[in-house]
Image 1 (tube, rainbow, N blue to C red):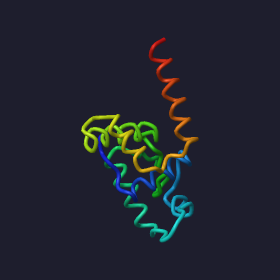
Image 2 (cartoon, rainbow, N blue to C red):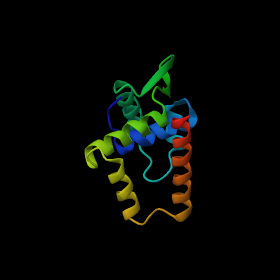
Image 3 (cartoon, rainbow, N blue to C red):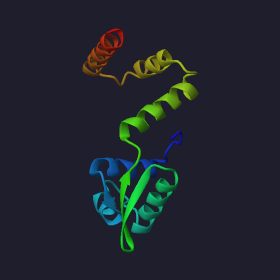
Length: 126
């Protein structure tokens, strides 16, 4: 799973991650934001995700219920790893500097990040 998803594919995956499984009709009904894509568009996206190995299905006659084969956390880790390698030359320090440099991280989020780092450090040194 070293593929990056398009924004539309990622939107479909978020819906599947939330629901655990869904028919295309349910994905269209749950779509938030405008414009809501046509049924055929979502059906095509799900089949593409299946070809990429992100989604599986269970057949019910002529219809299919789809479910994620790749977990959200696993995709996030792989995508972040790719961003660090390709955008920040493999430097997590560079990523952190980039995040801090834009000024969009609140004090509370920074404190949460420090706590996560502290917990990670404790767990890896134990």
